[in-house]
Image (cartoon, rainbow, N blue to C red):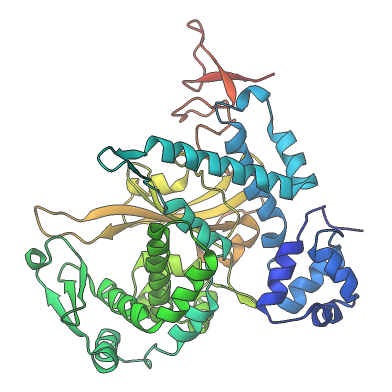
Length: 472
């Protein structure tokens, strides 16, 4: 008997290479021949159920990450492709997309990549500026998606940064901020000064290379000051590891490289403040109670929640979480999906998603069992967080963060206590976004779906402002 025909060769090859194993060595672990493993890695043989189980037992691999989640993410990406105005007349529906992903995942991925290149070309064409005096052209590139894909492709886990960061966390009871400041001074000749809001002119952190001085705004709370100290140490001490990660990614634009460099330094800072092994043990002992973790490690709610989404060490992983941050208008400024939850690449989040509800009860945890149209069901928690302000004329900003996992893991989380996780009724039916959602009865639909024909009838008022019928 074989598992559903998902081609996993590249993932298994990457898993083997990450562990420094030859095909002969890994094949010995599985009890198969090296030639058969070679066929699997080249997607010429399917992966059996027994082999999947051995992957989980011997290498601590999350099987959902290898199978259903990957297919679900790819199917959702293709749904966006075929909803495009230039393609939706073809009438490719969700069933056909699912069959394509299952039967020919490499072809499906190529279609998604081709569409992404088309979108990039459109953006480039619209942003093309011509210097008439010199006859030169300048392309304006938007690198945010490339940077997000960089972290997604690596499941937001960077072992080299974890190893370096874990050695820097001071002993228990030590003043963390003082210890980090002293390290900057001792190892790098960098002095740290807390400056007034006016002196910082709107900035929260500014490093003066010439003076070897790190200025931090007095508006920053202690947890944020410590984070920025660790961030600066990361730029100085993890430079090689960060540079190597960026070089191997072969990013297309300098702006993409800079965004990834900043993201990796932030990752390093989180790893310094919340060392992997200690933080994972605490998270499991506290059943992922974010408030207890933030108090124990002296970090903010957002920092602790985001760190939970990075606990993806092979053989010692936490629950696979997705993480996102949004403003009150629904704009998602940060996102990572280790749990297989799909965020729309080209539109906003579903208005029924719990991240929006958090603004109704500032500072309180909101929870939701959310079901996507393909049946994938997630347990989510959301809460508002406050961003530093600068006084009466520059008040604090408010954002909301959401953390979620597959419903099958919800019982391990303290926030699920008191819920009947076995019942289907509590689930909130959500979508990827209004433009791609096929739920005809949604009362909160903000836009008609791209992939269906709009029906306008002055004599009938339904639950949604936009009635539609499927394309034929």
